[in-house]
Image 1 (cartoon, rainbow, N blue to C red):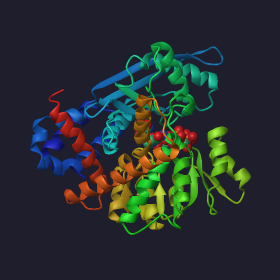
Image 2: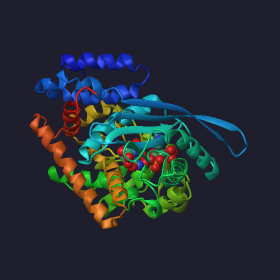
Image 3: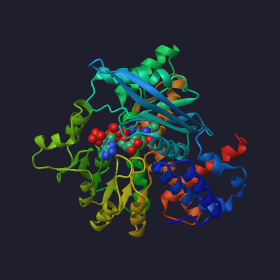
Image 4: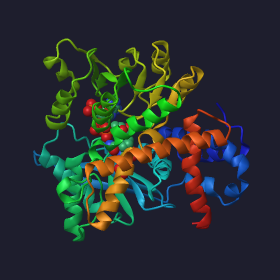
Length: 448
Ligand code: NDP
Ligand code: 2IT
């Protein structure tokens, strides 16, 4: 599909020229521009103010060396990133990804998506993202700590509670955030809410751990209800078995669905009786083991090597919660052929553009990541509020606020899609609603 709006088509060409070798970033910008065509037609003032040009260029990109010593006394060197993409509506906010596949293009796509996601949350947060090509898998706690300390030794010069507030993402959980917080506090001599996803004994928010997965299900629930359906008695396939997948499984089950599959980067399990989540939590959160260990306890379940086969399991609803581009055209076709009618994204950009075309061609319900998975960063925003007032709210209070935010996000996507003549296209709705708030702020603040 090509852009029809000449202004956006020319600008996309420039973006491609300027960001060569970063296909994930180009993919994210292309999708947003496709949705923004009617906005560009209707709002020449935003073109005049240079908003489109400015929004695709990060405000600041920080790339740094992260040296650390492994358990054998050998020096290792990783590359650290923090992309401070857009601060029009609040301090930069977004997670830190620790995964060997991390390079500039991944962090830029994530940072770009974060601008619109954070805008949709209704909270005052700009867009940022960071991380490193460090692989925490197979490392000792000591190695992870030394890496995190070295990473923060540089990062602490650039962040702060009113400037830039990182959090978790793939490979960065409570352990890593704890080590990073400790190092920030030590170097800056400040106890502040500079990171979110902190431990509950040092400023973390109740329900942050659950927030992204729960939020995905609250959003899905709204989307299903608006289309005359519900989670009740539906068969659900969820990819991944990390933070987002685990709590999406929990909430989908609470809402009456049966989750039959989970995966990791090696393979997937299929349990027709419904996933035993207590076991998955033990394997993944406590023991840091592979998902295939599940069948040792449940021999009636089946483990298959390789990730993409999970999308051939018949289901009503699919919630991709692992990583980018995990559903390609063929996987999307397999989902459609086997009766799946809704795909709602827990991971960031898990569907390729071709997969999204398959969803639309088959009239499937499609909930885009930047709306559906915004619950994590929304509760991060609530953690910042609690840190500012030096109070902590109850689980119920945070969870209720999260639920209301997810309802609001669905409403904004739905209404923006309708207003721009694309009813039911929540991808366009999310992009338009997320963009407009940031665009108005950028215009009002002048050419900065
Ligand atoms: P975790 O590190 O907790 O879990 C990631 C899961 O995805 C693991 O099961 C992992 O398997 C799998 N995975 C990661 N990379 C790949 C890959 N290249 N191929 C196949 N499987 C892979 O991360 P989260 O659950 O936090 O994040 C999952 C997704 O959700 C990401 O896209 C993230 O950006 C997004 N997200 C996270 C939020 C949060 O609050 N944590 C908020 C919003 C979005 P393995 O263990 O084998 O690597
Ligand atoms: O992709 C995301 O929204 C996150 N990884 C969460 C970011 C945050 O600041 O909580």
